[in-house]
Length: 563
Image (cartoon, rainbow, N blue to C red; front, side, top):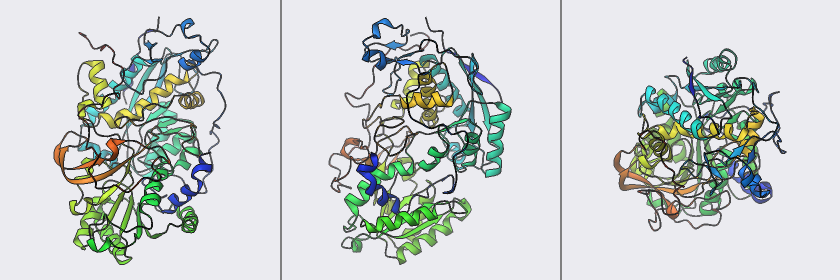
């Protein structure tokens, strides 16, 4: 473990609208998803802080002063753009300008926070973790760590850290199992004494739960966890992409509004085209099962509302057993006459599922739900193309830009004058760092988990264009519980097995994810009532060569040496 510092320069009723839909969505039987955490009988930890109310320890934001017509009487510092009211960073996600509220000072406000530093752990997954396996195929561990530290330094120099440096500690996970994950978390909380961890094991929730129980923030923790876990451990767990309960709202617009009760016209087997869809759900589960009771209850409610899943099959993420399990799953789906397979799980299992389906001469529709990279071109090319040519659904990812146009790459080049050290994983490691640094900026000098939460809840919804998803936190009416994830909206997608181009890592190849309506994004309920236009190229894009007109953020002079 080697501490490092980033020093900034000194300053001169969703339920009323979507209740029935939610019941149907969960009835799909996909509530048990990849890396699900917490059982139904879990209770909140004693350290939970209830959300709600105005925190008078937060800073004064530009919008506050604008409402009072006092913006010109406040010294916002040299990094504030008075034309936008946001910090001068060329990003649509730049936070609002902020100044400390009179009488609110910093100091040692919480564990890991002193008058001069905020201690943060940069968690590196163990070698046996799925995250490490996927990352190892992209950039070296050294380059990924260099990315993380450079991005923290960059944002610390532009965002407000209230006179503190960000001290980072590198922690390599000792193993992806529960025992090792908990031991690592105890070390972070007690030996290191960190305020937060950025990153966690990809397949094990125990790390995040143990940190939360000890009052330590965990940002970007777990590949995908249910929203109930974020609520139980609030305000300590934060993420970027939607939770299952959140994205299933838009999934319901697709499954219920566009597919249910209609023939399976997108199946690879022409004999299915005249048959009314028969749904089958395949999803990751833990041992022992996590959500069986809840899934059964909501399945009954969904059936009463007109939707029924003929079969729900679960699997565990044991790589050595995936091939045999996939053959068994396909045999069962085929036997039950399933025309439409809805998959929620990891990005590895579809490799085996699609191959097994072809081996058994079974060609259904595949519904993509956007879980953990299953909606990417890079992974889509690894699946059997005779199967994936009939895959469609939703994605929370942005419409694709060239690698060098992605925000993490572009900001690094703008700030330092060079590309990021690890170009292929720069975007992945940047997302939780952006959330964390936004929270520090918005919290003000009195940095605690409570002000971190309330500050992010005060962050204005930003983005919402094809290449820039909308992000927000708290209660903006999109979901029926406080939102601890960044991305709010989704887009409709389908797989074009013949299109050519570059994937998310800049690799040329055949097979591309197409974004419908030019990549238009839909908030929950926004895609309700849309027609089924999958596999119609009209109005679709496979990406953009640069940000479309009107979507580019404000531009500022580069602070890189020599500029």
